[in-house]
Amino acid sequence: MAAIPYRRLFGPGPCNAYPEALMALQQPLLGHLDPAFIAMTDRVCDGLRMVWQTQNRYTLAMSGTGMSGMEAAFANVVTPGDVVVVGVNGFFAERQVDLAQRMGAEVIRVDFPWGQPIDPEAVATAHPNPTVIAAVHAETSTGVRSDIAALGALKGEALLLVDAVTSLGGIEVAVDAWGVDIAYSGTQKCLGTPPGLAPFTMSERAYQRRNPRPHSFYLDISLMGAYVGATQGPARAYHHTASSVMYAALDATLARLATEGLENVWARHQAAGDRFQAGLQDMGLELFAADGYRLPELTTIKVPEGVDSARVRAFLLSEYDIEIGAGVKDLASTVWRVGLMGANATTASVTLLLGALQDALQRA
Ligand code: PLP
Image (tube, rainbow, N blue to C red):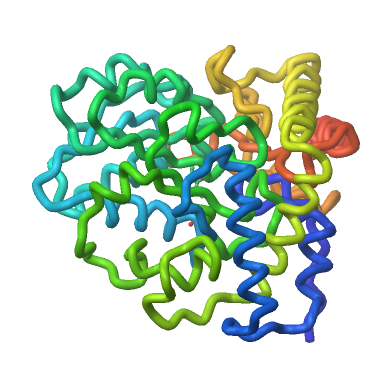
């Protein structure tokens, strides 16, 4: 078997997982009906309530990557003909538009320049009575944070649907306090667990107003008793062979985060991001995301004039085993995206990255 290289994953995608999660992957396999697995799903749902900061009964880890969460979110609350307003300031909000359209919604998109946050007031007033208002909390394509609490305060009767793929477990996400009705994430980013599950949460209000017969069977929240766990969810409604291995990894991560303390986890991400962004500016590099809205866990850097973006990325990979990301779409060769997420959100990572980048800029 060919050896898999050991990479330090500082891209915008999966990060290097917490050791607790990786070690959990080595444990014996559990059957999906085993009482020990049912107890594990209950623990995972409780741990997710902690990181989402919610009491929502419908809080679970969906089988599938972040996109399964995005698709489930729209499938469960959109009925054809509904008005869906989307604040669009990057690539992943554009996907929300696409998905809402596929579900038959009348979509009103409110656009903002890439690199800027959404304006909650403009989004909330784009239509007098939308069914859903959607936005991305942490735009992975630009490194920008939008103010979801402000949007929640202005949502009126609409359901607020939020993408938290790059924020959950890295910066504050307060589902109940912010008035978020439906939100999804992925395990591979700030949660520091391999990809494969989509943490998901839905308020009772959203559940009562859901599409009673969503287009997707697999993602129908009312049938997901098997994921929600034995004691907290509705009765098991259909057979589902959940990946007990991935649940074990997420279970271990959530236990670790509880021990570290959620606020300490956020502080660790903030400190690493601040230090990294200050170091980059000391090196004379410019940041892409608007000042005041920069995510600590995902930094976007303008590629300096005359520097070949792809060459630098290839150099980092071959000389340091470091993966960083290119920009998205129009920004492909002009922006780098560097993640300091989960286990990577440390001072040691910052020092390594700054040194390696400096070397790459001189030698690549
Ligand atoms: N939303 C955002 C903000 C993302 O960054 C991503 C992935 O990078 C997704 C959705 C899709 O998640 P996944 O690739 O896990 O399906």
